[in-house]
Image 1 (tube, rainbow, N blue to C red):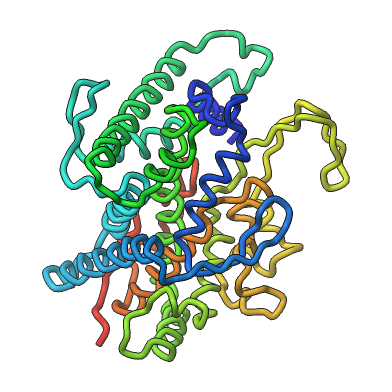
Image 2: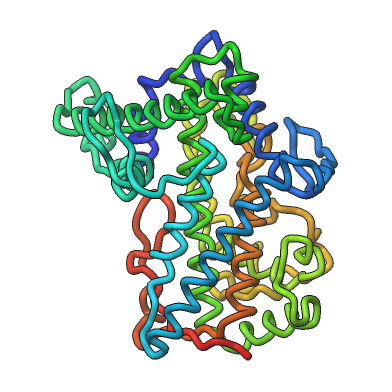
Length: 418
């Protein structure tokens, strides 16, 4: 995992996005937080070291517009699943393929104001890229490169020795990613110049972040795309795997949704009334932490951490997976047991029960949106379909990648509920 984080550091080195005198990390994070907070109805958030109650008017125009993106995504997923059940009721479906497509779409809508239905011309590369190729450049290639092995990571005293093949690959990925992001931003600038108002993150950065360089803007936009398109997918797929594997808990969740929603489709407004759905979400984050190890943190000065002396210059990694599997903290940690989060000691509104979203100043800025997307999607899928793993699927628990993707995409057999 040390090597994985080194890969990400190299991918970001040339960007100079958050380490320059022109724009500190706190300022960039502040811009990102301000925008992401506008996407949520109401929630608790951590700002620096103080807990802040944040209530956002759900009826303002910005909220309505971005809420519609999430609603459309869920409708699209449900429609495609219904079509599959109608056409091939006995055939297992690849859930990841459908959900991944829709998540990438919502990440693009929020970042650049619109989905990419066909293709775009990337001037810096001199070629036209399809939507699938753009997804590969912005998400898949980067996540795969992050886990490439560099022999120098095992011999730190030899880091001065060149590893040309790896370095050239990283540079190539960086160049392609930057070219695609610049093409997306340039396209949005043309829309702004023509008077088109889409109220997206690009518009916000171009109008509010006057001190940011073009490289910094591109990096911030790319971060929102990859984070929305990747980790939320990981959590939702693992949750549906566990639900499909356990008919009793699936039945309990379905009954809770029926008691609250009746014949109405589940919406984000229902989430506060669905404690078991929230427990399913948090238990999935605990057992299947999307990021099992927090990316390296650098100690700029001597400090004390948890009773340990940490000298300046140290790199620190926190083992989230180890914490969430600690038998001293969790009863039967290897078991997927949502009921544990129904205990009174857990605050239903606390998003940071498992540290899956980090904590403190570097807390995940998209945690609230991740909860809204994942919880409402899980609820909708259970409300409309009965899920059952195909034969042999239960043993497919291996993971791959920097985040804990299932090595083999989940395949389930669906049955439409009455």
